[in-house]
Length: 133
Image 1 (cartoon, rainbow, N blue to C red):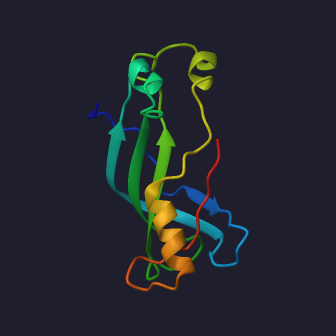
Image 2: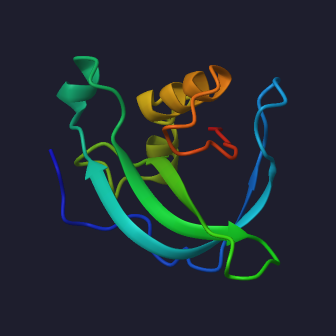
């Protein structure tokens, strides 16, 4: 189920530090979010989650730049964030926290990592990534 609510708000000016993979292919560092370009939420209910459709999440695309640098160097940042299961948004924090799962392997990240490892230069360059619970 899609929703018109926005979940990734007020992130302009936030600095995000990326960690690298074990392979030295990726740029690590701190990036500053400049502007949100789009946001798409996929809110699942408890039955959807039980049926294996995964956790509810939101994906946002942002314009960013290396922290402390000039505005001439810009990049895109994709942020995926788990959000509460439909109907549990206002339940106790402990109940919502119990819904948290490890970040799934998003297809976009898998593809960009694989294409980078293969030396493909026809797709956006993956500069780094960070995932966590």
